[in-house]
Length: 383
Ligand code: PMP
Ligand code: GLN
Image (cartoon, rainbow, N blue to C red; front, side, top):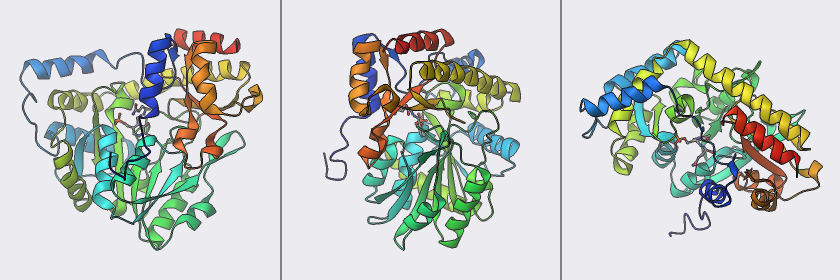
């Protein structure tokens, strides 16, 4: 393995999902739903396969039907207008969108400011691009993790090339507020920075929280690469259909990299996702409501089991603090939890440069059937 990736090892998700399998535990580690997405969307994929649509290389930027559906979704939900022909790119999941964006936009030695804890592929993709990661740590404040805007400002230097933002935020469940996003936008404009914003959980926001795309803030459309994914929104994480929306110049740059990573993304699934994006608003509302009910079941169970729970405003993850249980090392806790309780979780420390800072936090996924969450809660109460 080359020096850029030395030290990254196996992703925690593979390690913990393997542990769940080998111990027969309930897997609340890796974030994937245990119920597949809508039947009609699955049928749309089958129809495309049978009718021979997408069985050979689809167009590099993605099939026109899907690019049009992505643009229509951004318009309908956020009033953001993108040209499907020049401002939309279909990728192999959000993971490829992140990697291709960073490889396209970061020069060796550039600094990339990213919110910490960060989704694990960010660090690896920045490293592959030869960039330097500059974390800005979200910290607990009144029951949720918050961004310190002064710290963000202080993290930007003359070498900063771009800000890598994620809202709703994995793993903390924080949703950036209008004021926070406005401040990020002002900073980006003032320091002339590019922004890559990972909004894969855009449809999973609860209560008073609202998802606001960074690209909708003044001065941002021209400097922002927005990333979405069908995996999260439609519960098909195995399909690996994601996308990028940005200006023609930025999309061309990202596409230049994508063409040499995967060339194109899987064909029949693109037809199905095009149909999924056109589902009525009631689909998105029902999905959100069902995840909210699950969040509440798991949050209650974790609280009763003695964890400190940061009730998430978005995503399908709950971050907890294990110190009230008399524990302090999330890694050790997660390695022994399957044996003690038959439940798998993720130690948030893997999402931190400063592993000490992340040590007491552990993440549980609630994108599981209600009876599974109840059973997990029952088991956790026994620890
Ligand atoms: N970004 C975040 C914040 C995620 O949580 C995930 C999924 N775990 C991804 C990107 C990757 O998405 P995809 O499966 O579409 O590659
Ligand atoms: N995004 C999911 C998570 O955070 C899983 C990602 C993965 O397995 N790479 O759990």
